[in-house]
Length: 207
Image (cartoon, rainbow, N blue to C red; front, side, top):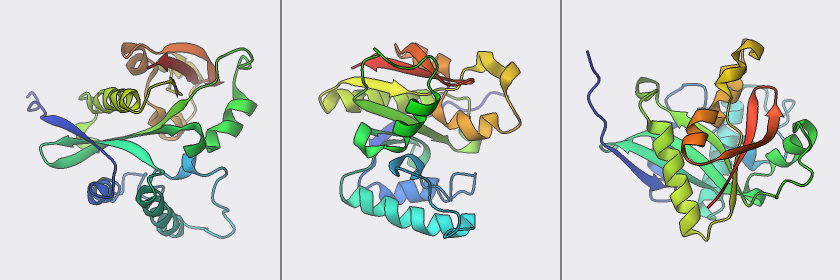
């Protein structure tokens, strides 16, 4: 039996759409403790101070809300009708600083000579029953449009390469699938410039 077609729309994360972001991130699907804060920090929360997911959730929720109120957190929410079902985080480099260290430590080959990116696309979230139905691709297109409206620049993503499945470990999809997939980025005109790790590419697109 075919699933009913979706009626997808997108909206930017703002103080007005914050309640929808809360709704999506309160579903307990593994991202509820993070609140898409990981890449907005320059280093992970210290485990010695925040030992449980519940403790990290409280801190991340508070900090994310503060950043949204300050206009320092960007992303696109995807809706089916009025229900928030998907999300993609993006931002300028200084808004997503955790990737600075990861690019420097792990990129293969080293990114010497590769133009420096202006924007980063770091995280996708799709509610479970809506997966494999184009929600993430819709979010990525909306992100690129938003970046264009903000003046454009060189956009960098870190998608999982499904062709590397022979190198995947037990947690590869859950730990690195949130970056999206190489094929999805290729469909939007991104080209590969290196590898972040053995399973994830570094891809660029000029907008």
